[in-house]
Amino acid sequence: MELIQRPRRLRKTESLRALVKETRLTPESFVYPLFVCEGDGIRREITSMPGCYNLSIDQLVREVETGRKVGVRSIVLFGIPDHKDATGSQAFAEDGITQRAIRAIKREFKDVVVIADNCLCEYTDHGHCGIVERGDVLNDPTLDLLAQTAVSQAEAGADIIAPSNMMDGFVAAIRSALDRSGFDQIPIMSYAVKYASAFYGPFREAAQSAPQFGDRRSYQMDPANGREALREAALDVEQGADILMVKPALPYLDIISAVKERFDLPVAAYQVSGEYAMIKAAALQGWVDERRIVTESLTAIKRAGADIILTYFAVQCAALL
Ligand code: PBG
Image (cartoon, rainbow, N blue to C red; front, top):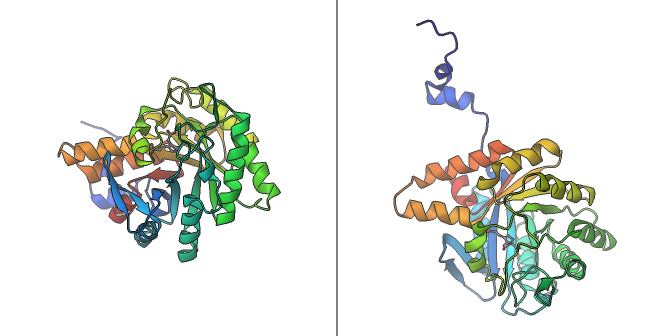
């Protein structure tokens, strides 16, 4: 048969395939999420996320070093305080767990990009991402606390602030507070498009941040909505976001791709705890090939348009590259 077009010609050998590869994973574009807790010498594995830990500050520093050795130079930090209250006051305490952890990391490694997750749910006793009144999460009063938290994180040495709580106007509030405090050079990575997702289940065990009543659907997005994602992202761009994040990642590749298409800011995607847990669970059963499935899913996320990928597989995957 006379076939002129034969795509298989370029798939013949490993070297040919590498030559025409369109998407490459690089350790520098990974962000490694880490959970820091009080105490000393603590490395407590998270049941629903095998291979991930609650780490005390000393152990956290070691984990950052492990990542750095394989080229992962960015981390996103989640603090788990011992003391939680109605306003999440440990989120913006000068000696809060996150602030101390940031200082410890920056003291050891000047070249590591420390991204501070900016939210209240790990710090409130009710587990919601803002101030609660009569069962309602209040928007504007919460903004003041987020802004205060951002400034305290910047003062501790955070390189990027990543607000994740989906209050309306959170980027503007944080931008202006940072600017007023002399941090006009600190970028904001906005969780611009964050869905109310069941894929966050294991994270809530890791961060002990499950809402004690109700759910987050009055502030996080409906998974059914795609056009609304672009509206959310546009608002954050107007308010001064420097990086736009989509979260979760693999079930929302269409959204990553649409955001990439529409905006010219760097796009980040968060492969969340549930995505991690599903792969781990199946791999532990021997039902899927873990290495291949990790590389394939991260490649898919990058191919869809993510410039930056937040993933619990960051270090494991970087070691394979
Ligand atoms: C805080 C926050 C959450 C995640 C990141 N930041 C939890 C939530 O919104 O309930 C989820 C990350 C993950 O599942 O890996 N608001």
